[in-house]
Image 1 (cartoon, rainbow, N blue to C red):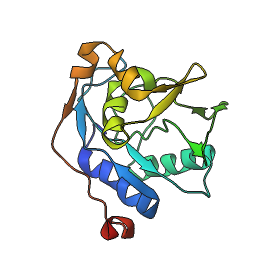
Image 2: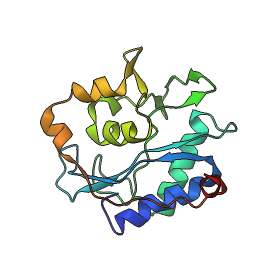
Image 3: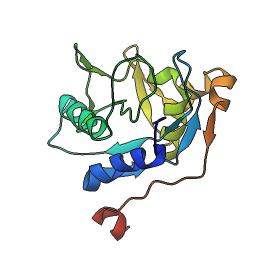
Length: 170
């Protein structure tokens, strides 16, 4: 999110996922990516599970969160109230591979984005991401990025609140 109350926009997704939410990274701030002049983004990685949703179901949920935040899609990589990306999706132990007009999984650019990889490692240190058909450790993908890309991801000290029954019992 880089418009309006950025932290509240991220919190709305945490709240919306409810009991499906398993992990929430700390919040990071990063400069905009993609060449459009705009303010910095707040980013976080969430890990959620719902056996009733497949990749398209998760995409529909992501779009619901964006609509609730009044997301407008008029400029590629432009400013936005909320941008929810699906990075990877699993059906049990199997990673979902999708290549259609609506959904590409795993996310085709995630391996190039420190603002995805850094917070992801905070919540899943052994995470892997399939790139070019091969599962690769996220830590290695991050290490291969330009140091300037990595240093542009700044921990801001904000924590998204989790108000689920699961969190209350932990």
